[in-house]
Image 1 (cartoon, rainbow, N blue to C red):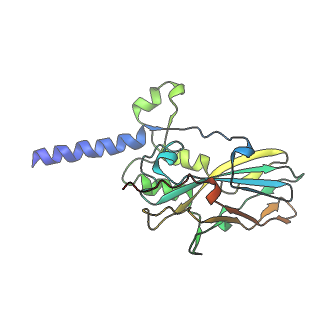
Image 2 (cartoon, one colour):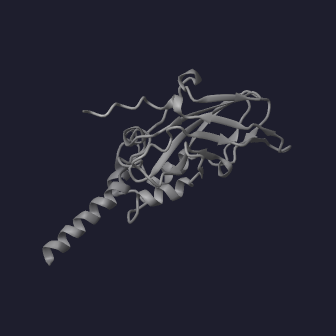
Image 3 (cartoon, helix red, strand yellow):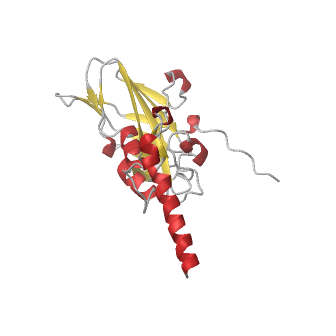
Length: 214
């Protein structure tokens, strides 16, 4: 009995450490020509970079099995060449799947909470607190919400970016294959005039499927 209790305590400690010593990963914004899934409307260009595998998602978030657990991120990059401040409301963004199903975004805080159940979402360990700044430790909640695109104000002449998340009820299938990211509109600050819609097919951004081994 004591042996099993010890094993349980060790496992709990490892889980806590996984969240407490969470490493922040930097996601670079590339030149727009690097993103094959993009569209321009009314002086605004929006590119979408779908993270459709665990390996790719791990390059952005310190989670090795994000896609396997059903959560699929999309990196959205917006170039505002208009003369207006613009607002993107991510709650209105829809993923239209190959089967015509419409999926709405999942808040970043909810995704972090689901991926780190039973662990510390927003508390650093002592080791992380004294680690050199170059090691970039943080908390899952802070990282996910910091990278979230939600309701960002887009400055004129600037490039803004952030992540949105969708839940895949069948992680064995690639949620993004044959799907389209649909952003109904961006709103001008103050006047609430709209620019859009933006309809971005995601297939051009997906790696070619590998043939099954015979």
